[in-house]
Length: 279
Length: 210
Image (cartoon, rainbow over all chains, first blue to last red; front, side):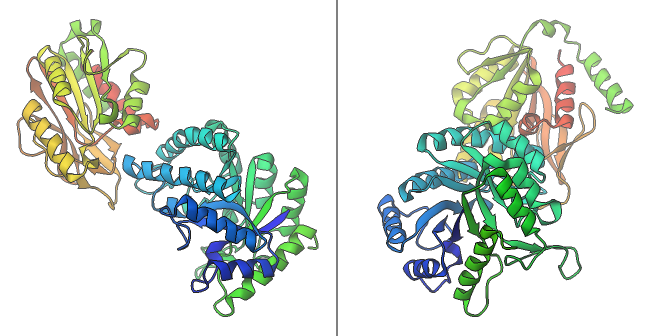
C-alpha cells in the first residue's frame, strides 16, 4: 500500500511547491489534489496549468494519487435545480479530465446530500441517474469514480449493504466506493465496510473518530490516527483479507494549531505503522 | 387512502360524467428541453401503460393531456395545448417556472396569461421552512412534498385546489369544452422518486376524468 495526503492540508501560506517538499520529506508517496479547494487547482485552471501541476508533483518525487473535490457540497448531483445539477456533472467531468492529465486513475465524488428540503428517495434516484452516464465517461477515460461515504454529513447511504445496492443500481464497473474509515463512526464499523466492498474500493481515506465525545456526548469528533475509537487492528486485517493494496490517503480534519508541518510527519509515521501491521 | 378520501374521490369520479373519455388516450406531452425531464419520467412511470407520448406536432385526440414541469412553452406548444382544451380534454399543466431566471420567467408568465388565462406571481423559494408539504384540497385533502420553488397564483377565476404557506399554487377551471388543472408546484419529480402519496393523488385526479 502507498501513502498519500491531501494538498488541502498544506498550510495556507505555504504555497504548492513548498507543500510538496514537505509531503515528500514526511515520507508520503503521493498527493491527493483537491479541485476547487486550493488556490492552485480550480475549475478555471487550464489544461496547461494542470500539466504544470503534474510536473511539479513529479519533480518533488511524488505522484498524484487521485483527484478529489469539496465542490459537490455546494453543487450536489442531487440538486433539484437542473442548472446546479449541470454544474455538478461538469465538476465530475473536469475531475475525470484532470485525473487523466495528472496521470491518476481515480477521483472522489460526494454523490448526494439528503436534507430537510430534498428527501432521500429523490437524492437516491437523481444520483443513480447522474452516475450512470458519468460512469461511461469515466470508463472511456480509464478513470474510476469513487463515491465517498460521508455518512453523517450526507445523511445518505448509511449502511454498507445499502451502499452496495446503490452501486448495483448504478451498475458501472467504473463507479465504486472511496471509503473513508473515519466517516463511519456511529453508524457501524469500518472493517465491515472493507469486507463488504472489497474490490469495489477505489481509494481509502484515513482518519480516526472519537465516538460520543461532543460537549453533550452526542457527537463524534474527528481526530488523528490511533487517537480515536476506530479498531485499527481489525481495519488492517480486513484490508489484508480483501487484498487491498492501493492508496491510503490521510484526511485529517483536526489540524495542528502550532507547527502544522509536524502533523505530516506524525501522520506518515502512523500510516507506516498501520501498513506494517505493528498495532 | 382514508374512507373520507375514498368517498371524495368516488364522488368526483361520478360527478365528472365523462364516460366517453375512457376510450380516448392519456397523452404525455414531451416539451423536450422545455421541461424538467425527471417530471416527465415521473408521469410516464405512474401512468403507464395507458399512456401515449407525443410532442407538440402530434398530439392525438385525448381525454387527458399531461404537461410535466414546463419551463418553456413555445407558442406552437401553447396553441396545441389550447386545441386539446377546446376539444374537451382535461389538461394537467404543471409549471416549473420557479426555476427560471427573471427574463425567462417573464416570457413564460406571458405565455401562461395569453394562452391559458393563468395569472402567476413571481416565483417563491420555499426553503427554509418547517414542513415540506403542499396542501391539496381536491380531489381529496392531501399533503404532497413541495419541490422547493413555486409560482403562486394571482387573483383569477377558478377553484383553488392547492396551497403552500398561505399562497394558492394550484387551480382547476373549465376552459373551452375541457378542464384546465394548473400546478404551480411540480408533482412529477415526486412521482419519479416513487412517492406513494403523490402517486395516489395523481391517480385520483385521473380517476375524475376516465
